[in-house]
Image: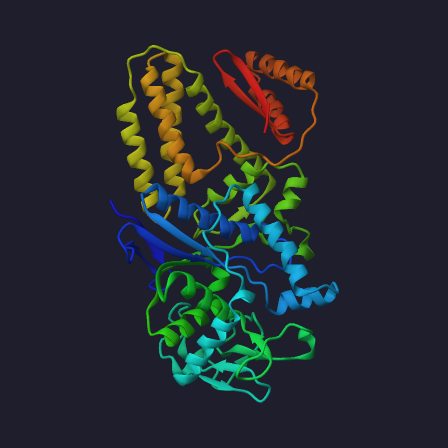
Length: 468
């Protein structure tokens, strides 16, 4: 079996072959650090975390770089609005971003390059593009990339060449897909930039947004590497421009596999502050939703499908996490003396998980394989047919699966002060409801405790609990 990914640039699934056997170099677009990242951003970041974790599960040595955009139109504008320095602003949100990553149990990237640390290298790449005839300089000292000079322009975003605006140009760091235009590599100084500027061969100014990622990725991973990720909103113009300038500056192929995650919707609507459906991770935590439920919700829809966020979906996500955790705890507490060592089930479950995930990270199929194993394991423990050796083997396999899912040992991130007698009373009430086959009431009690950050663990000796 081999891993297959949907490659945006070819618009088809392709067998994954890294440039170097057993090793993967991947670049993932990180946040622009002028505000708290929202859950739409984290949908992309969680996808990238899932991708890296699965590649590691499959035995690859992965090197990940994730950029932090700390100079662009947005960061400068926000720092001036708040009357603080660019560094003060971006340091605040860099710290917040790294805290959010820990909350969601995301693996730290190996490098977090910051744009302001690579200005000389950006000037060098722009100079190389200039020497090769791919640029022109405007009267204000801004340097633009000539898209007409690069015949492959538009390949990534599948643009119609007739839509490209001859002679048109744009200096903004982001713009809508209304047509491809020459874009700024270097932006001549403007008064609204305040004290944010550097010296260059073209005068004072600062880099354009797109050149930042080209330089940071090639400096850290080389001019040709395996995987580049981001959200679908990055395909054009950002990744299209990044591809063009990188290939033209280095002469190398730049990236072999482009992977992009779809949008996150809220109750089937685009997330917007004006619609009052805009959430940061902190917003959800303050509303009482545990971090593991948020992570589960974000990873369990295929990355190339739009993800519809809803409160009910968070509740269902918490139930799924609880089910996996309860099974794991039961396995650890199991003291049965059955004869079934579970090897057949482990072999089938492992192969089914890999077969699904190898198919462009088919997480639905992967989870189906895991929960089929959970159903079998629970039944075997109840019937007493599972051996202690089989239980240990299942524990080891679930641990391996959890390297990909990363939810078993998550701290919910909630600070809870609850009376133990209150929890015990709720557990007694839940047991009474279940004994009377009133499972709806029993589930409602569980959900109430979950929302308060209390995890229930059903074992053969009774229900245990802990604060997550």
